[in-house]
Every structure is written in C-alpha cells, then in structure tokens.
Image (cartoon, rainbow, N blue to C red; front, side, top):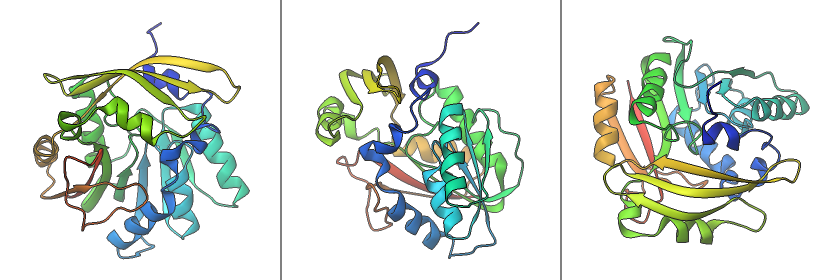
Length: 255
C-alpha cells in the first residue's frame, strides 16, 4: 500500500474544523467576483476542483448556478453534501483525483480556489496534470479562475511569520518553514486539530509559482488570454495588480 501524501492525511476527518479556519471566511466576496466575471449568466456550467466542504459550490448554487464539485477527501465531500442538503440544494459532488478527471469539454467555467489541489502536489508534473485536467474539462470558449501561492512573496518575506500573524486561535499552525530557492517549495510542519479534537502534525511542502511560470504553463495548454492579480481574501478584484506583498495570486485564463 502506498504511503499517504501529507495532503491526503491533512483532509481526513478535518471538515468541520476546516470550515472554522480563517482562510475560509472570504466565500461571499469571492463568489461575487466569480458572478461578475461570468456576467451573472445562470445557464453556464461550473466545475469546482478541490471543492473541499463545498463553500464556493454551495454559495454559487444558492445563487442559481449549476455546479459540480470534485475533491479527493471523503470527509470533506460528506460535509459538503450535508451542508447542501440542509440548504435544500442539488449539487453534484463527486470524489475524484484532480490529476485524473473524467470530464471533457463539459464546463463553461472551472474554479480552483484556496489551494484545494494545485499547488499541493509533490512534483511539478503532478501540478501540471491538474491544470491539464482543468483545461480539458472546459468548453471552448471557457474560463479558468484559480488562486495559487505567489512565488514573489517568499523572496521578500518570511512565510512562517505571515502564517503566524494571519492564524487565529484554534486554527492550523505552521512552523519550521524553509523556502527552497531552487524548487520554489516551502517545506513546513503543519499542526491541525481534527474533528475529534486530535492534534495532527504533518510534514508538508507546497509549490509557490512565479507569475511568468503560470503564464507559460497555461499558454502551453491553449489558454490565450491570461490575467494575474493579487488575491485578497474575500475581495478579489481586477484592480489589484500583483505585488511582492501578495501571499496568493488570482489567475483568470480564457480558453
């Protein structure tokens, strides 16, 4: 049996607690931005890759959109299903690995927000597979909106310090961060408390991307218009040019 990767262990039995993390608080504003980007067109089909507990999928479904949510974590998908049922919403939640999705030219919009899959993979090739599957799932014309870690940030700031300041009591913590300049990967020890109150310590590593890399990867997948901005929690905007102060970047690509 293959050893579980850190992101698989992380999301086991971590659904209710996940919904209390500070980074999940921007859902409404992020969905406002998505709606504006697609001109409030309710006939469009949306795929949410790495949907987690379904926060964006549920909010968009509430607003009348047809959404499919996919994730690798059974506990997160179960929580998403419970929440949708409570709201009386019909959302198609499916368990899939984002590197191997079954969809081809089915969706008008693909979203991947808050590092739900990309860029958590252990190799650059695997991260690329996620982008490839997102592109394959899109109709032409189609649009991809995602956030990812900004490679310019760790060149100027301590990631550990930033995560420490932005974390609230009871939330996940990160320590022993080391940023590798050759691979643009941040290695750290993440501590979370799962839904049963057990503390879990995981050795994680995440890939930060330079904007030029993202542009090149997306161009290689046939995206013709690629815009990159700073991603502010719950307040995505095309007015926010990317800077070294932005921990995440917001990418909008058209197929």
